[in-house]
Image 1 (cartoon, rainbow, N blue to C red):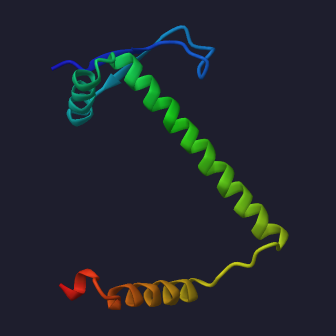
Image 2: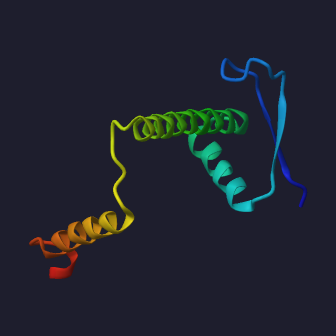
Length: 107
């Protein structure tokens, strides 16, 4: 079966694009898009475009957060925590949650 093609229409997010074809080779992704098309009545172009816009917004936010955290570390505003201390803290939190009444371990 040939890959399914979706045209991604130009938008404010991609003002430099006239049009773009997206080739989907993963049958699971194709099936998800088909389901969303059937459930929402929106076209595949619209769904793919919205997904890409959301992805790049999240990617930008993550990159900005990482840059700020790196700058905080580099400037000395925050101090790094040694890995073994992080692991010890996570183990303590996990043990405390498991010992809480109503936790899945009590059932």
